[in-house]
Length: 332
Image (tube, rainbow, N blue to C red; front, side):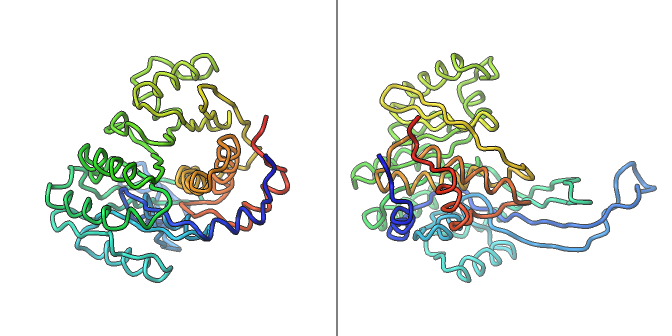
């Protein structure tokens, strides 16, 4: 099928996406390194800049916003200054906090990256990854029930930070199916096989190896096909989008696998690439686009954000220009 790219990207503006998952704050402390500490053999970073960015499911919502769609976040945060910053920043970019509950017993998840001479020296994580309590779980499910009929597609964005319990996953998928809304998953290890019946499952190579406990590096197409078919059977899903870094992506659909090559990129930072991939893919699913086309434009979005330092959302105009330049249509 030939797509009119301008019309397609304009149609993004009509979509509404429910994003269920772990939100976090990505903090960057940047500076210059000119000496080694006399106290220990570590570099001394003289700070020149500090910045904060949305991470995790919040970055997915930000990606969707930048693509023109309306995003509804369903998550938790702590009762702390980091959570307050996220609340205010989300409001400032036009994203609602209505579905973000405050957990009084845990901090807002924060990843602090120390950058010296444009290279990451250290990362410090502040988090509590225990699963949410049943009260919060019920409140989140009640919120999902209240909005599910008003969205076009649902994303589960799992970072293993405690939000996505087995019950919440199962019940939310059930609610999406009852409402006739397609669902997508960006998984992590702990609940990898709990997302039965989703419409699109999007792991990367490491995640599928860990999730299926494989004794393979999945470098050959034969190994990839075997792993994807095993996963499809276990999850009872017919669509799997497997990102393979420099090898591009593999899209499993209609009981077949298609491989789409990656476009050459100057990779500076892979942080947040998966967030951009799942965001674009969700809009493609909502619009009923063909699976190879969804796979290619999603992977293209991930590649573009890898050319930026830090977690940043996709630039819609840049993505559209690249789709046109490369004459992407998905067919191979």
